[in-house]
Length: 189
Image 1: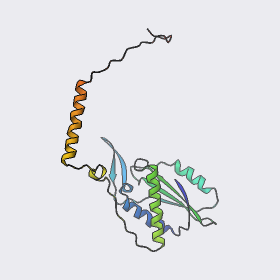
Image 2 (image 1 turned 90 degrees about the vertical axis):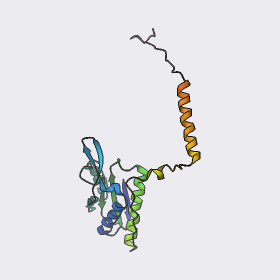
Image 3 (image 1 turned 135 degrees about the vertical axis):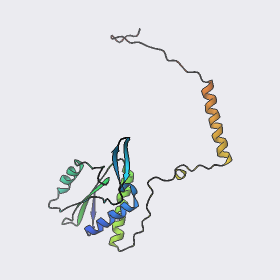
């Protein structure tokens, strides 16, 4: 994703905001490792989000950098799953950011929210505000995803649905499909 912004002041601000973003989102601290039993996430506490800084020397530079970044693979076994390129200020006080993320950890809408959070951190740092981070968990508790109450009503509904399923499976007869053979001429036998 490529975003143009006005007024991001220093590289230190951007680096600090990336560190805060990584503290907030634990999937920005993982790698994808190919083990004996398949792919899995491996937590890497001390890795940083790669930040590439490019000095803008012509207006169409962002197109070249974007093409270069899109053709450069994210090394998911050794690096963070997010990579950021910062194309520094031009004469009209506009900077470009190119964010590339592995799709294994983020969808498009979440990616927009992640970028919005990053720019929110930049704004707080520039304004000298204290940034309070509430780290997310890698996996939320199952109860928060599906709030099921273990009360008598729920248990009775669950029991009735199991009985209904078993009953339907017992009385329904399988339906046999008619076999049709088509010869090489396209006619049915």
